[in-house]
Amino acid sequence: MCQKSQLAKLGLFDAKVPRYTSYPTVPHFAPHIGAAHFQSWLAQIPAGSQISLYVHVPFCRSLCWFCMCRTQGTRSDAPIVAYVAALKQEISLLKSHLPKDVSLARIHWGGGTPTILPPDMIRDLAAALLDMAPLAAGAEFSVEIDPNEFDQARCQALIDAGLTRASIGVQGFDDTTQQAIGRSLTFDRVAQVVAMLRQGGVQDLSTDLLFGLPHQTLAQIRHSTRQLLSLTPDRVALYGYKHLPAMVRRQTMIPSETLPKPEDRLELFSAARAICLQQGYQQIGLDSFARPGDSLCAARETQSLKRGFQGYSDDPAEVLIGLGASAISRFPQGYAQNAPSTARYMATVQGGSKGGSFAAARGHAFGGEDQLREHIIKALLCGFSIPSDQILQRFPDQKARFDTLVSQACAAFPGILVQTSNGAVVTESARAITRVVARHFDTYEAAGADSLPITAPDTLASSA
Image (tube, one colour):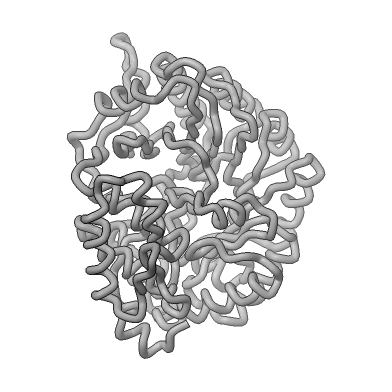
């Protein structure tokens, strides 16, 4: 890796750069893209193709102060019951508009806390999804699990529903940092959840850790990383805490002066990364690690790795449909995001006596060079390169523009982005600033809500 002085000159410690889980980024979605666009794009899905689903459950029993997801606290199950009824209405509406013989490549439940749902509601929601369309061969059904909102009954309900991968939210095990972010989780509790899942036959486990937390030290993150890896998860995502109290009111509970400095954040990431590599995990893109043999490793080698709102994936589907408040859909034609307000979302899909409608409230329709630039940015973040053969196969009529864009970027980052006979590559020592390089291809100059001093790789782990 480059020396700190070199990284500082390149803007690593003060640049505000989008996380590029989409292009353009969410702050550039516009309100004129709505339900009509969503419905039109649905109609253009080829018959017999595979699609993927993201289901957003925004409820939590208590709100962690670090979290930027679209969530709301509830002690009662009444709002959850009403929300799931609206989800089922949206699923029914979607079923009536899907082309024939569509199957499901991926189903992912995110939140919030999807495991806040009681067992009978888990089964009911899963049945509604599978009634809408069948699973494709090799399909994956994953659910984000809060270890503090999980028990044997919920575990069995998910297994009965076809769960194939559990995504366990860990963040860390140190008491000091836990208290500073309004969270309480022990290693023993996570170990119990892992044992419960594996005893039930769920072997594919994804986990995540946070660096850059208040009061976090190198010793703490090293200890948490070693503890987590002792459970041998298949995947570990190493995300950076994003502190934006002006936008996320709950983060005002975390004093800014308790946070590590940008240079220290880089050291925290590097320490956890080193342990993952020492334990035999392979780095996937900017911030994820997988055990050899995991499908993400194969996707990286075949250049089929994808990056989206849930991080890195090997999802084969070109279409991702988001269900629930604030959920984002991705089509070849653009993005569509549901109304973020739970009340507005529910009112729209249920619709009263007039009948419900799709809840897409904003988005972006691709135009101009959007898709070319999107593929360049995703190639950088997934493989630290810009492969001309792969990209020009998709955009053969844009070779001259592609060559110009790559040449200009190489000139802007001498010794960092190096031109090759097949496009360009980011030098290994400079991979920490890959998102700075990616920003060079962004005509929207994304900043603010989707940006932060990058200091080390980050990704957006939620849908909103």
